[in-house]
Length: 143
Image (cartoon, rainbow, N blue to C red; front, side):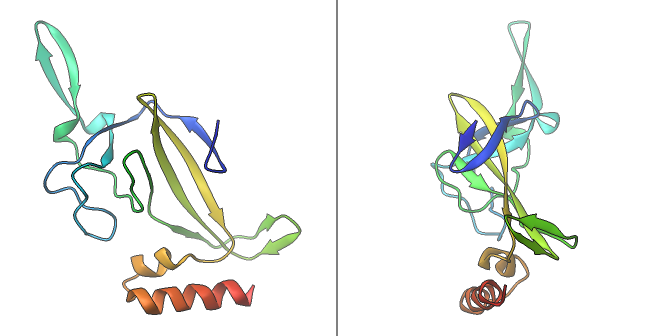
C-alpha cells in the first residue's frame, strides 16, 4: 500500500494507543494529548477480563517519533555509510527514517530514504534549529 508516497506494509508486532502523561517525542518534548503513539506489542501488559486476555498498551513505552499527527509519525533518522543509487545518481551515503501510520485500526510501516541529511537529523545530533536547518540546506545543495 502506498501512503504519502512511501511503500508501506502492515506490521503485526506494533500497536498504538492514545498519548498519556510522560510520553515524549524523539527530541524529548512532550507529546500532544490528542496524538496516537506507537508501542511494541511485546512490551505491552496483559489484562484479564472475564477470563479473556487482552493487551494493555498503557504500560508499554512509546516508540520515539517526530512529526506526529493524530495518526502518523516519522521515527529516528539513521545514517548509512554505503553507496546506493537514487535514480541516476550514486551517492556514498544515505539517510532513512521509519514512517508509522494507523489506517482502519491497523498499523502500517514504511521507510523514507534521502540522499542528503534532513534538518531533523541534525536536530537529533543536538544542534540548534536554525543551525540544523542551514547545515541541511548546505548538504542538500552540495550534492
